[in-house]
Image (cartoon, rainbow, N blue to C red; front, side, top):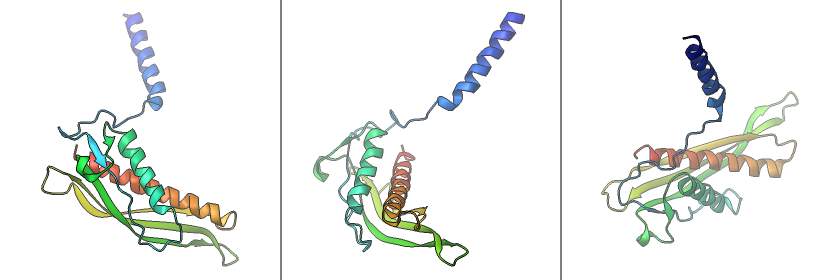
Length: 171
């Protein structure tokens, strides 16, 4: 009896200690039958952000989510796709977020808004058709150019995560 109890507590401690190492993955999620490919075209950048590669960076983040975290394959065109994720980068801002004692911004915030829709070709209605927003702060006094780029990447990552999460929530 004592050895069974010791074994139980030992296993419980092992599970609790290792639970931080367990990661949840969407790999193998229950994607609707017949959906094997997704088409993710470049989202036109209508934000006047001044960042020439914003569309490329969003596209890469979306492909990483949908391809690496599901069993979907990337289709090279809309005709060969079972699902389509399409949209537009609609706005971009880089504004002071907090002001320091010398009345200068010590934190700026990049905010990006993207309008997107996710549809299955064989379904009459979109899974979603809405706006997504991501924001990220940076210190403009340290390295304003790289800080803004990193903040834009952080905001795009949030957007890509939310788009993916909203798509898989219907799975």
